[in-house]
Length: 117
Image: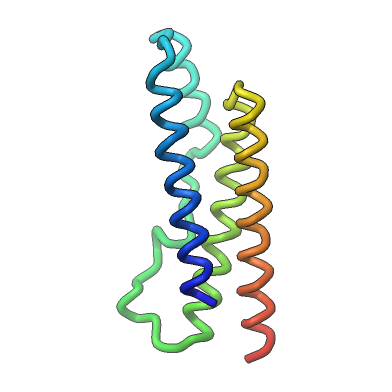
């Protein structure tokens, strides 16, 4: 299951790399970009994501791996949902929504597996 989820995450990475290339090719309004960064930073604030505090060398069993992974998937959903309003291109926004649903599915799968232990 973890290998399948990792494959899907790799697909997400490829999408974000392509998205970055499309965004980088667009003209940049420096003032607007600075405002966006400031707004995004104010939204994130001091938010720590689940892997920020994780000491992966201390993860001792499958239950801990699943719990940490599920927490990270949930953090990812929150982060992507915060990004969504900043994406102007309708096709890219739709792609991001698909990724968000996949991330929610990852979390559900991990939680189900955790519940079965």
